[in-house]
Each structure stands twice: as structure tokens, then as C-alpha cells.
Image (cartoon, rainbow, N blue to C red; front, side, top):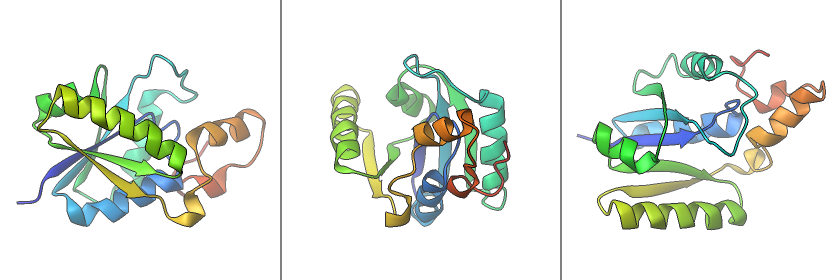
Length: 152
């Protein structure tokens, strides 16, 4: 039996980069749980319910992908769900440094949980939810940066 992975983030909104990471990870895991976390340092543009709806639409043909929302530490959620792998996408070296620090702290708190990094495909490297939100806030067309199922 393959392991289960948790893919945490704000997904505000889900981007083509997020979609690519999940689709490429599907063969590696029995199930991928996309977990929308509440980040106290970020003000969301879209309600969590809308983000969950978009994610369900994007992965409707992938029964091994589910979406939940959560609060608190990601490693605590992993322990609660019995998940041993945290999936993270890396776009740049800055992402790596940031994610490495979090992964190492998670490992220190819960040694049984591993962080798995996947590299973003080159054409998605520049796409971030923050930039997509800025485009939307300023009346631009962000459709090329999000999955087709995401309609604003």
C-alpha cells in the first residue's frame, strides 16, 4: 500500500503550479489530502469554501485527491490523520530555503513525518498565488495562471 501525503497551503487561489504538483504526485501516493490552512499572517482574497470548491472541481477526475481545511500546525494535523508525508512544491532557491527550515522544524517536533519536495516545472516557476491575487485585485486577466475550472 502506498503512503498518504498532505499538501498544505492557502491555495488562494489554486494555481497551475499547484495543480501540476498534485497531478505529478498522484502516482506516488495512495491519497493526497490538499489541506487549506488558516495562516494568521495572510489575509485571504477568496473564502475557504470557494477555494475548496475550486480544488474539488480541478481534481474531480482524481478520486485519490481530497480537500480539507484546518487550523494549527501542519504536523499536528498529520499526526491526527495518520499521515507521514508532507508534500511541498519548490519554485526557486528562496522557496527551498524557506521550506527547508519549516521541514527541519517539523522533523524536530515529529521525527516520524517526512517532507517531500517536488520541483515546479519551468513554465510554472513564476506563478504564485500572491501574484495571481494582485492581478485579480487590479482588474487583470489571471486565467492563464489558474486551472480552467477556476472562474472569478
